[in-house]
Image: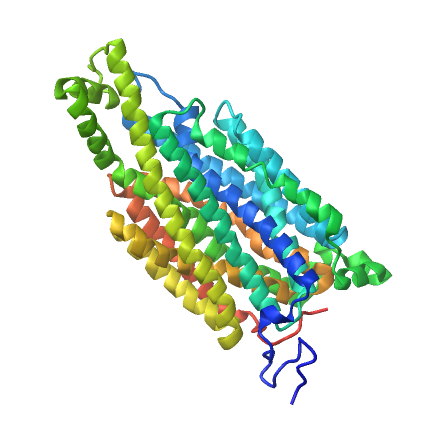
Length: 500
């Protein structure tokens, strides 16, 4: 029988006799909180972009009274998809660069650089004048976002007691949902303010708020130490030459296999989330737009009269023979537009909130289940569940109650996979290549995932009509099944020490 004196004492089946959170010292908690905050703010930025994207495209591609409404909406949607692809490509490149730097110059230093980078360019996104400078800022933001994850999970994996590691990494990933929920609340608050009128566009305010995480870098610089495992590898002359080496990663047959198969495993969830799941708020916005518009105009008709509102409705429809409005009517038109945008933003925010309520539970749940039945069986369950729940949402999402029932289930299933990546990828590579290998699997897959929104644009044009987005989402959800094909060829790492 093992003693309780050691907090890391394993039982014969590999589980600690002490609850995982009781195994952590004050410094363990400090590392976990700092890494979690870095990833939380990282996800805050991602979600701010997702929620701000429709409004940003509408302002950056304004159109005029002679513009064809359907063509203008298509142009804005395409520009949003291209901006998303550029952002994801920057994320992938940042993962390659900073994953390598995390092994070469240290986890803590690299984390500080990445947080400063994504904070700076998130803030600059608010000053965009057109689609292309907006896309450039998103690309540069993506560099920092892509680098933060790998160094954060490598840092936590190396510092935590072995039996606490999967739970701590699951907890770290689950807290990312707090960043997403914070973005949704920011979006909701600004949407409510927009209904009353704002001097500055809400999406620009959102990106300025996204610059605040830069303050976290000061805490990292002052108090965070490099893990002992990395310090040991850095002091060894032979190992030091191999730190962050892609030639070493791909020169070793075992690590090459882990990197390539891990990359495909990561692609399955990443494409599914960024090309399908994160378009759910856009879906509910488009589905509810006619009803919200009718509701707002009906409210205004009570006060201003139906004939006046009918004239304004023609202008809102951008009808070719729309009447000229008086100064008073133009004021009512502006009021109607603000209310429509604000209410659609509210629906969009509710959808994002529900995705992330489910995500928090799913990501933490993955760590618990993976430690009980193994990494591969848990991944298999989650891939199947992600596919089925996504199809259900995109096929039927329409009413308010569905946002609070179907969407959290989808968020639970889709984002549980990302806790799996945080737990599993560091267990596939040795210390000298851990950040590099993890980043390769998690971030390089985004080069492939960057094509996802472009494929989505193609499918949207193939599936014509008001339900095109639904059928596109259902078709692309098949990517979750790709992960099932890869799982049998990857190792089971449950109850095994990190490779050294």
